[in-house]
Image (tube, rainbow, N blue to C red; front, side, top):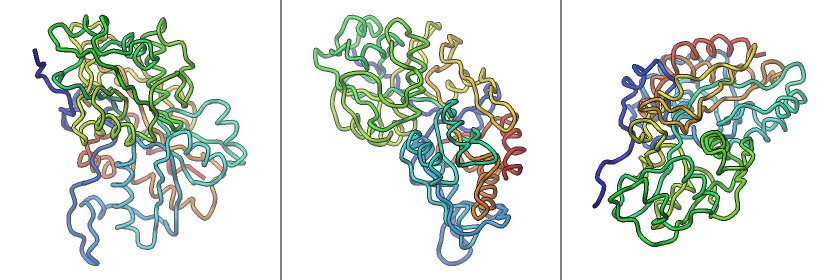
Amino acid sequence: MKLSRKNGLRASAIGALVVSGALVLSACGSDNNTETPAKEGGTKTSAAASNIACEGAKGQLLAAGSSAQKNAMDLWVKNFQAACSGVEINYQAIGSGGGITKFNQGQVAFAGSDSALKDEEVAESAKICKTGKGVNLPMVGGPIAIGYKLEGVDNLVLDASTIAKIFDNKITKWNDPAIAKLNPGAKLPDSAIQAFHRSDESGTTQNLGKYLSTAAAADWKHDPKSKSWPAQGGQAANGSSGVATAVKDAEGSIGYFELSYATANKISTVSINTGAAAPVAASSENASKAIAAAKVKGTGSDVALSLDYATKAEGAYPIVLVTYEIACDKGNKAETLPTLKAFLNYTVSEEGQKVLADAGYAPLPAEIAAKVRAIVPTLS
């Protein structure tokens, strides 16, 4: 029997806001964002660009990190540069680990990371920030989809244990009894599973590891804090886009990436059996129900969040991430500070958050957005 229910990004940005006022941000959307003509020069931008305050921004600002937020960053950069003449924002989507490394080496003004800084990374940042330290400012988040390509199976259901065993090379065939039990009636082939993971250091990898370590502790014994892929076996690809492309191209494959990589590439996504009454599909609305319980664990200017990866709430999708912009609270370079503050002021502003809907994202919840908006102007 061919299963017909399809996964995907179902909730609109407005619907996402209604659900528990949660932080619902599906990760990267399409590169083809909706645009309107600019007033002159032929450059295109969104209507929101006209409301951007440049506030002394000038010159070039370098940043790097999370690929989860790449398309959001592309949209923000396009709008900001259109509004602020002579400013160039250069964001390299090299993965969270690479971004943090560049930040702590003083090569970029801010980094994007899908996980908060570790204690040792904060300590390392003090060498660059000098009079301060790196702080975590949440800006983007959402579900991590488990994408797959398996002919004849449009709605695969897995639980934390089977996902852990697949990615740990302990379940290697699609018709394994554990998978068959979760998918009664599905025509699962007697073929090898091709599991793909990130080759680069990634906060997406770390968040998946945190989920598996929490929800399938008996089956995932690897370090949940590792941004590098910790298990043996499988095939590696660079970035979320690389993993998504690999899964799209290979029959019998499975991998993990932000939801809109699946949407953009028309990749089927796994529904998760969490122990709730029904399996939960990867969607913004369902991720919001899990992220709704997030607590601020950072202090002072740090807004690091603690997520609930083991939720069994009805309709709550448990594999989620939040992407942070990481900057010095004090000790930023004088020549780039005005541009850094102006850009981050825009990204967290109501206008900056509203345009995310065009790229498949949703705005920050009011409480967290207000906290970040209050912190950005104090960066020094």
